[in-house]
Image (cartoon, rainbow, N blue to C red; front, side, top):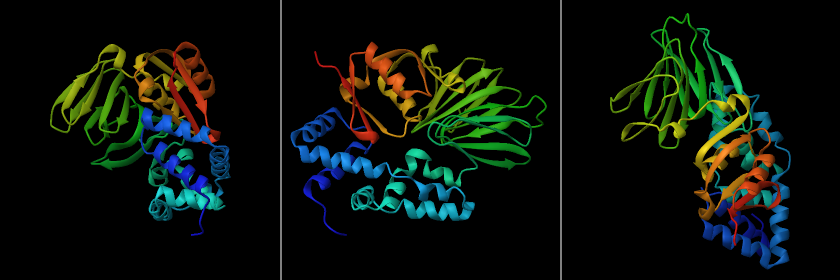
Amino acid sequence: MPSLDPATEEAIDWMVRLDAGRAGADVQQRFAQWHASDARHAEAWRALQQRLGQPLDTVRALDSRLPGQAREAREVLLRPTRRTLLRAVALAAPVGAGLLLADRVQPLGALIADFSTGTGERRSFSLADGSELTLNARTRVDASFVAGAPQLRLREGDIVLQVADHAAHPVSVLSAESVTRVLGARVMVRKEPQATRVTALAHKVEVLAAQGQGEVLRAQQGVRISATGIQRLADNQVDGADWLQGLLVVNRRPLSYVLGELQRYRRDLLRVSDAAADILVQGVFPLGDVDRALLVLSETLPITVGRYGPWLTRIDARTK
């Protein structure tokens, strides 16, 4: 591969670091210093952002492929390292840009899911038994039938399931940590990296942890299931289904949680520093207007919101 100038190589390195999970405050501070220290650094960063903003025609074309082809394509896309793709972008390869940012528009795993949504998208589906399944943004669900009973495996994101009153069998929602059985009830299930949250929205819901522990939830009760078992949630920790109306309702939750929810409706990367991550937030925010939500947060909390091109927004604690 042809060589790049030092400033562009450094810009690529910074993008990899900032996108490797939640970058700590020290990493974000060093990036800000690097960005401001030399006009060539700022220009290299801007040029890389522009490359990343090119049309994603290649990725969109994947959506029309047959499921088997999509699975094969996904495996191929995930092989190159992120840095290799970024170098391809910097060397004027628009296809590389499309592949790199595919996951911000439509999660690559969605190509092989039975039900899925992309960034900023909510969708509802009718199941064969008349039940209704609604997916929040960036959610993946696989469906199957076992002995005539519907089973939904939640891979990512969160869902609201309304089981039809006349359904002959309960609908089971499976995750790595739990099985939730729903019959004639309404439930929300949310998949976290190492846990699953379940909230009964109407009537009773049965939850079974992988270890065999079980709970029956009544309306507005919630639990978190992890490797350690089932934990009942306090009222302010029970997740509601306000996202169905395009709202994020927060009751004393950390800023990192709020930004994580807004990230599902935003294609650029939202990065919060350690100094700001644990600031508690309370309020109602529009999911359909993340810029407005960020403005409200910056006006009501001791934080700053900085934007570095169209693909990175950094949130930090305000210095006195």
